[in-house]
Image (cartoon, rainbow, N blue to C red; front, side, top):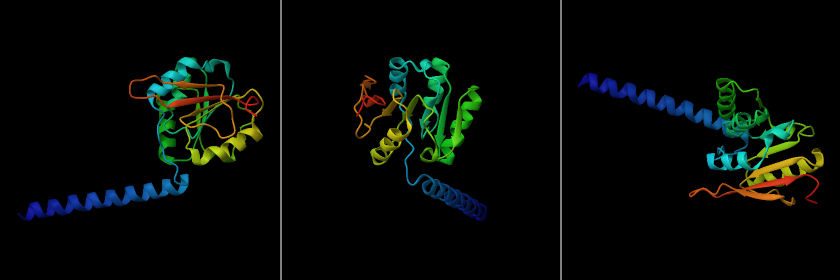
Length: 187
């Protein structure tokens, strides 16, 4: 009986210690990201995007808030084009960094806030961001991008921009839109 009690106490201490560490990590991530959620791009959406857009024609592709790096690896595996990703969530950054290393990709991920980066050299921007930041992003892209730069927004439209097209995964359980824009044709 005494051994069972000691074992239960040890298991409880380990559990609550792990819970405490997990809470600290979540707090740190929440503080660093400003509460932005990490939602990976669904695979059917990536497949539709890889089929519809020829990423081999772009020299400088950027993924804003690259999450787990699915878009980065899909573009490079499908088209051989490298992508620069920006991620401020430390856990997602490490996942993307590891994905790039394990797959032997030439792409890169920066532990950086894309709001503080100059995007003017990009000729293709991809993002899967929520509506609460897209208005501000629209303004940043308007100011920094050259005419002709492609912008692709998964799930949510860019306010004030007129899409060139809307792609859909056409999956039986997944049909969210992918908005494709060309800077200069939206105003």
